[in-house]
Length: 272
Image (cartoon, rainbow, N blue to C red; front, side, top):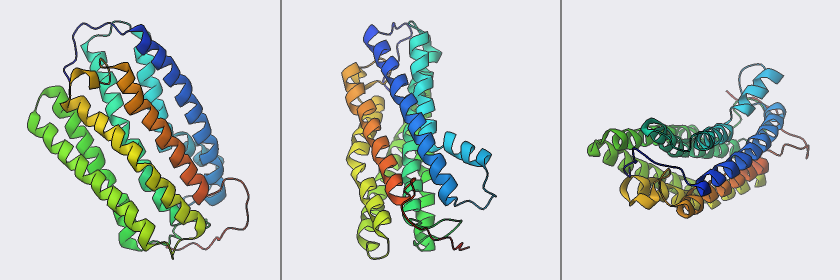
């Protein structure tokens, strides 16, 4: 991680960007909540009894909602403290770094939904069990590797940071390969909505690559790549804009797999 300055005054431009982030991610939180609530109520893939309260919780605290809340919290810290101390600078840097995990977790969930496209109820996936396991399992190395990179950067343990970065890059390469394989291997199996969902997720990968490059450069590159004290233009171009594109595409992928407006009959055969 680029070394954080102990005395740092946040530039006016950074505060303007923080205000814009609060507006943008507030809109994202609202849109994803409405869409996910309607999808949860219509399709309900959980074993628990469907209720408005559960739909509200699953929708408000969806992974894109968590990302939006992290970004709003980080931007609020920037606006509230023009001369933050070392602890606040570290907190802001950590919030910027961990935001990658909700996005990659959402990729996992959206791909699982592609296998359930057009169906409601628990189970009902067209993917075999080993594919479902892989789609769940890659979340663990994602969160563990991000923690290793962030903690290693903060406390200055290079081996910890390097291990986390290597695992993270390898995991992302695996995710890219898995999505490409799903697009080729399961085209005859998936309905149109499910297959198009996979293709839309595939479109997010270039944006993920840029966002991940920014994350790694923030720990290994020059000061301009620091998410807190670095170049504002680089941060907007490689982080904020990339995340906006990724969120839009993931929302679109979910909408393609599970239209939240009535568009026809859905299957309701629960499979254990």
